[in-house]
Length: 531
Image (cartoon, rainbow, N blue to C red; front, side):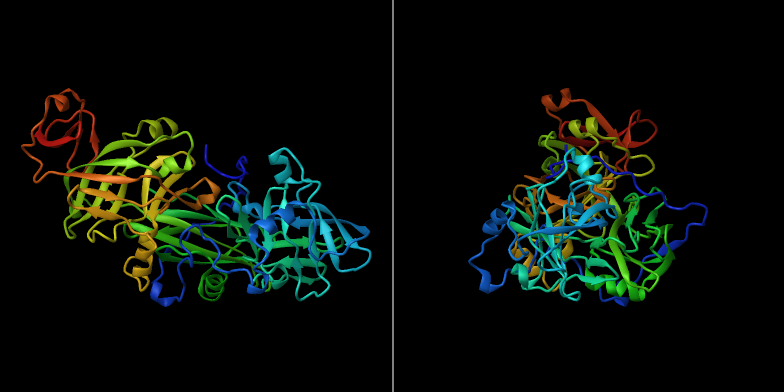
């Protein structure tokens, strides 16, 4: 089972409209845009810090105070019910399987002593409470809207366990992510709240998708739900991306770029200005022309052209390119990537065919690396139909080893794909800073071992949290068994007793080899044989 703070069942995706022809969108030239990669690579932890004037208030103290349910600034005394309003969720969407765009009815109360102060119990009922099997009837979300242009929320702990903080000076942040009150609707923008992880004692950005809205009684309720769905890759390398929108989203603008990006507020503004527009619910086909990772950035717009939702979708091109690769032996792959995300998958070492790029020495790929992994094969639908799957490792510079974006052919929660932190920064102006931070792997020529530092590999699954990449890996390494020419390699008695496996020269497994040359893997030894 995936290691998460909240284990929820998957919510059904909204159906995209059918009937219209699927347009093909080519990837854009990244030089046309000024988009920036993710600002903080590790776990997207905040770079913002608490104001120096509030250093005495530690995160732990803040967490304890919030758990105690005592608001910092909200007025005391009586609260008067205003009736039923609507809460649009984007706090718990930081956790797995809490879909974006959900909204439900809540009771809204106002301070009798200070009108403009509101409170509500957002999780007393509704879809999240139903999925968790319990409603949070004790922890209020307090909102100060006495200044409609500078609305802020008190620190809030959902279910007495999950603390969130509005990033404003009133909550001791060196940031001004205020909300607004207009037309009886309280709106908090995207990236305006942070979540406190008690295990790491760090803050992480949330409200990444649509932001939070609180519709006060009598307000016109809008449905601005937005997300993108679809696989990581397709056999024909035209990957369909479904734009799934609420009824009040007027259109969506997208940009598809090589590499790894996130739809930050700054990038979203650029996409809204320069992206290609599509109506509401739609399916867009992104045509992949080469192996590698592409990010589809998208923003949802209302009838006035304002951004009401945003997100990113990662997709991959998968090409065998057999003329560019030669089989050079095998690799002992100690898998620590799925191990770090699943508590019921133990570390295991598998043997995979090793290929090296003909144009770049030290640039390797492991062919169908999970095909022999007993636990993952048992838990998933490992598929290599139509083409192989690879893990690409660039070890051409021994101190700057990276795992490139690679779909791996494992299907537990949809397509699985991996890439490393170093891949984000290799060749950039901050490469040395990334090296100092420990983002790159290393290659030891003496032991023929590629070592990948812990917590530096991302794993994404297309149907888990809508394909979001999670950082993990524990003890991942690759030992290269390169054999020059790979003919004439001796086979020990132990190896002779091991079952022989056969592959064609492109690295594809062959059940009954005959009529040509094949790679024979027997234990850790590899030979080229004629059948």
